[in-house]
Length: 341
Image 1 (cartoon, rainbow, N blue to C red):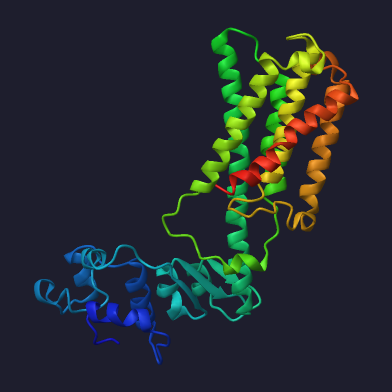
Image 2 (image 1 turned 120 degrees about the vertical axis):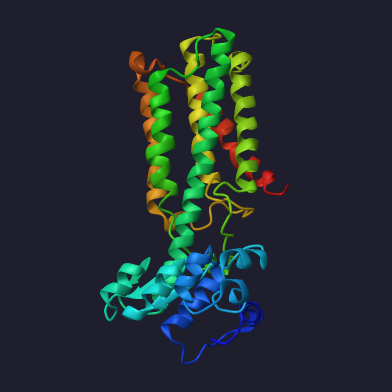
């Protein structure tokens, strides 16, 4: 292993499974050759590793190689995880993308150099850490998918109203309530989804993968178009269908109510960031999500019915409530159709 050239080691790495009787330097060489971290970038750094070597003749023959040579031999590096507990494992742990050290028998040097400390020294905990890490990443994506949809719709609605010279259909207090749904409660609901074993069957994301995927962009755009069309219909021609006068307090309350219920149902839709059709799967494994949805609906009822002059809302009839909820619920079948595209 130690006598191989960088090019020869690159040929061995795809088939390498066990490196027996390896020294700490061997581990460090293996890690740096896989991910490209800590490789010398110039002659001075290379000579610090090989003081007796000749940069002109030996740089392509001595491990671990150098940055320019490494980059020219591959498109991208590997994502490397390293476990260790001794002081000598420090360099390899630090060079790895993810270093895992032992909490009970590991040295302080190893713990400082690592990213994750396994508190119970149980290797099965690594599987849990991977599962939780993927779950946290997915939950951030779910929240962003939901938040960006609400943001784009609310901002566009306000902007169009301002350009037309008319009063925005959502006043400051209404926007504060929408912001509370979007930020605080949305983060709690979508950011606390528990992990599942199915996450381990998924291929890991690439190192340069975007936080906002193409499927998320598709979801945001389709929901944005739907909600803008719905709110435009309610704002421009919807009043007679609810038996209210145009631009009356009842009319504005209906627009506000339908908008909020679009977000409630879209929050359920946002639980899926891929093409999974069943957005209700595992719903009751997250009681906080269910509680927040119930609280949002109850609070919306109180705000509409009893907000009065403070919120500038008024009482709605049972028929108007049902119509608002049904219009908002169209987000769910729309989400299903969208995932078939």
